Length: 338
Ligand SMILES: Nc1ncnc2c1ncn2[C@@H]1O[C@H](COP(=O)(O)OP(=O)(O)OP(=O)(O)O)[C@@H](O)[C@H]1O
Ligand SMILES: [Mg+2]
Image 1 (tube, rainbow, N blue to C red):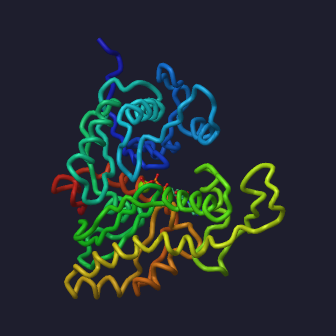
Image 2: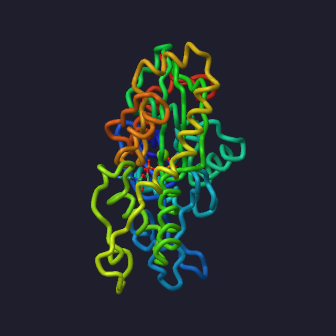
């Protein structure tokens, strides 16, 4: 007989395109790792996980395949996702789970059946027992501190690496929303293409992300560091020439996001729209840190956006709050209110 009965642990897992967060009930956040895994090419054996694997991205190490299992906020490489999630769940619990843990996770707001199944099946194959899915816009709103017991509508936009989740939240539910397959990864890709088109310089996605974080901005006044062409590639002979045009590129790239939010707002009854205009709208996700993004969205949508205090943690904080109060979750994970 077992001397210590293994009690059933519950986990909150935010499987983000860029970062995976895991919280254990009672212990809080225990895992924050890039959603990246590296395999030895020939037999597809995993050789590195998370931050260690991320360091291998763009390096083109022979016999090593570096995989990001999620694209656009959804599971794209199922087997890689399972192996990575299994590793991270073991890391979170400190051991292989004796009893399959219940998992609360975020799914794309307005997820399709296929997207939901892929996420649930990947978590189950990685060792989860029951999997409860919650729309990411709802989890983000809870994590950003939006009260869940009030009827007034609030707009929340969560712009991560692969997806932008948009939700109009009221009474603990997403009254209207959408998930766009567009995020920071697409901004990185736009920078890559731009560098190739305008300057004939090929850069990897990690370098493009660095440029976005260092120099990316939505107004000229907010541009951070100046990037020079010599920073883009080793042995470049363009001397001190500056990389121009990033602000215009970022502004143009974000147009589809503003257009989608507008589409959702235009579908709302007038009373809900009035409520949204009376309070701050909230921007969460890593892209909330892009310089000038709240000003751009505020201007394009005639609203007032503020960034959440710790934008990259809102989803996991919301999932953690749900985990600690599962009784308050109803309507098959669609509503969270006491
Ligand atoms: N200071 C910064 N400025 C601009 N972008 C940033 C900054 N910091 C992080 N990002 C971007 O935020 C994105 C990651 O955000 P986040 O961690 O919210 O994504 P995720 O939750 O993993 O992905 P998703 O929710 O889309 O599946 C990346 O594209 C990253 O480059
Ligand atoms: Mg996210």
